[in-house]
Length: 258
Image 1 (cartoon, one colour):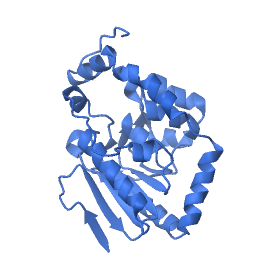
Image 2: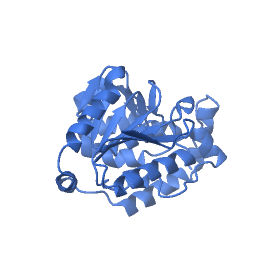
Image 3: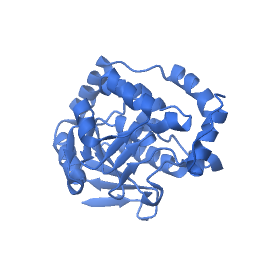
Image 4: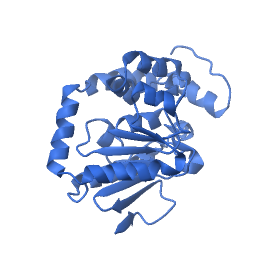
């Protein structure tokens, strides 16, 4: 039986149970499904609750609409100071290896923090119209999660191309890089992801958890303290705020290197 939580359709994050699968939906299509404080708080709560629920074996992460999966940080909220997170936030998923399998249903463009969210998932099903990119450098920012996870998923040369140019690439190109598991027509993204999740959920939950844990252990885990120390000066910089202002004002940024 399907049990949606919360019931309000205007909540920034929706949660729905489908048997042993929890579907988490970013619900801000009017704002390119971008990440502000309430959205990150909602995602953190949803993944924390799914982790603690023994009846949940697999999580599917998707987004509302058929154009954008997630455009990353909400730069307007960033400028307005609206990024405060209530609870664990995205760290539940992105700052460690989440213990349960996560399938991303990429319904549209995934850039910046949107791609970083996708990289925190284990299996990716993408719309043939989707695009992927790390535009942070063009905003004077750093793709922290993407910068650390991407070279673990695809060859370094491909990761550097995405991370240093800031240019988006199409779903087929990303499949060639080895990042996504399936590229399907837009209408088939969520059904395909759900079918994959249900196939995984049919297996033993303890075996799933330990298999995932052991496979990730083989490729190591980045030093999170060192990452945070490297990222903070960039996010606190004048260039970071200039990049956000330039984006909001639809103009070229004027970098100072400070």
